[in-house]
Image 1: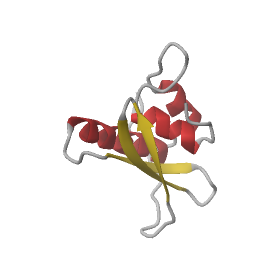
Image 2: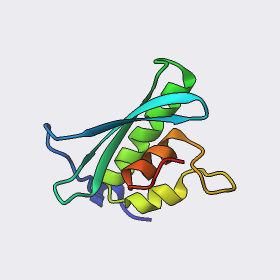
Image 3: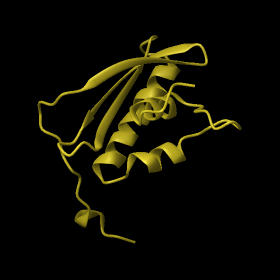
Image 4: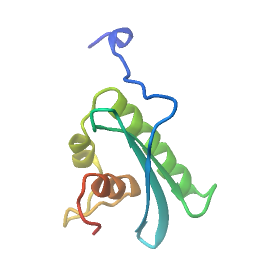
Length: 109
């Protein structure tokens, strides 16, 4: 097992450009935003539900924070996409999965 003190998190500048878009999944609306590192790799993603304070909002926000940390510790976008829960047809089952697909340039399903 690696020593966590030797792992490094790639940090973003305090001011950075971001892109925002809306998505809908199973009748719930979400707003997603993301920023990239200077080399173009995805660095962070944020999600919020149209019902602030709801369980779906809390779950989406927590998932996005966890994904952002994974990205900043070097996890590639395609790995997060494959790890996201999907239905039997391969469509995303979660707002994070749907957002990652949009960010990766895949058409919304």
